[in-house]
Length: 167
Image (cartoon, rainbow, N blue to C red; front, side):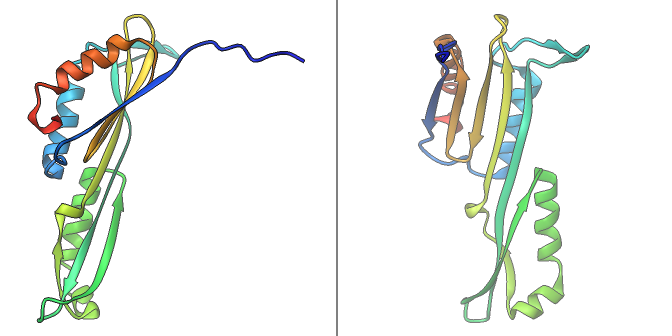
């Protein structure tokens, strides 16, 4: 029988943030800034004849809850929200909060507790040497995965150290 032979040493590193990213708006701004400015110097590449940006968002997810409280401030119901984009999440929250029939059915007044929101995005990056790696952002962590070159972590860590929200 043939043996498996190791081809590469793929690594993963996690930074636990000292405080969660404060809100969805800050998270959206952070993701867009990374996509717009490419702070890690990722390089574009060609795939099936198309030029792909050096850093791209490959997935994202947003979730939270609308809580219904009665006149005594007792929770009488909740509606969980999970959406594929930040825009969809915001639309869902607004729609649920503005639907009077839901408040009547729940027997309470709706409120969106944004401190319980969760959001995440995965960015795929390409280096000048041809290596691909991922950077996953969640509200309380940043994970770099599928990399071989330790210089990738050094570059991202140096960049993250300049942003108070990623401390």
